[in-house]
Structures are given as C-alpha cells and as structure tokens.
Length: 128
Image (cartoon, rainbow, N blue to C red; front, side, top):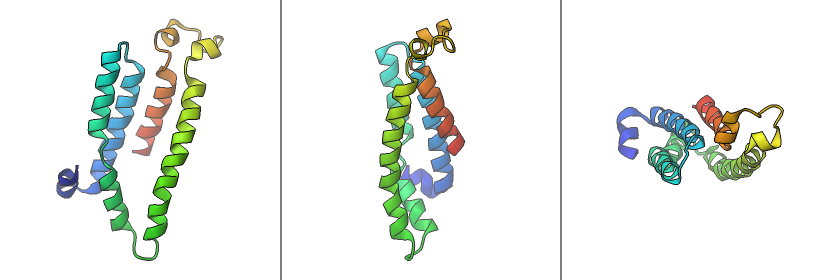
C-alpha cells in the first residue's frame, strides 16, 4: 500500500480502500457458506491495509501545533467505532425475527445478517 500511495497519492488509496471495504462488507452479508465468508473477509483484509497511509496522510495535513491532537483522535475513533458497530450490528441482525412486520420477507430470512452489513457498507461508501 505504501508504494501505491507514493505513486498515486495517499488520498486516492484511502478512498479506494473505503470503497473496497464497503463493497466487501455488503458481500459478506450475502455469504451463504463459511468458505464464502472467509474468502470475502480475506479480500477485505487485503484491500484494507491502509493504516500506514492514513498515518502518513495525517502527518502531511497537520503541523507541529496540531499533530499530537490529530494522532490522539485516531484510537478514540477506533474505539468508538468498535462499540457503535457492535451495538448496531447486534441490533440489526436477524431483522425477520426482531421486526417480522417490516422485514418478514423471505429475503431477510435467507440473509439474516444482510441488514447490518448493508448499513455498514453504505456508511463506508458514504465516507469514501
């Protein structure tokens, strides 16, 4: 990823990674077998190794006066995202069982984890 960022720039690589993560999240929600799910998560991991690029980009867009604050926000964002995503994913999973009047269609029974991963993928695509 570092070589790609050197060649094309940090921002395009970060945007590509967000789009790839969003699409792979949606694909993960439609996996029917364990091997499919493992393969999709593998692809997501390969396409989403950009933490070094993000740190480099933060260094480029900050100066000595605000760089410590910017780097301090990164783990905070990660922690908040981890808690919020766990709550959201648990609340939206198996919508046919939780809200049968709204999500009673066969689709939601066939793909019980599609809704939280569609929401996750949409968020990732919107942030790209």
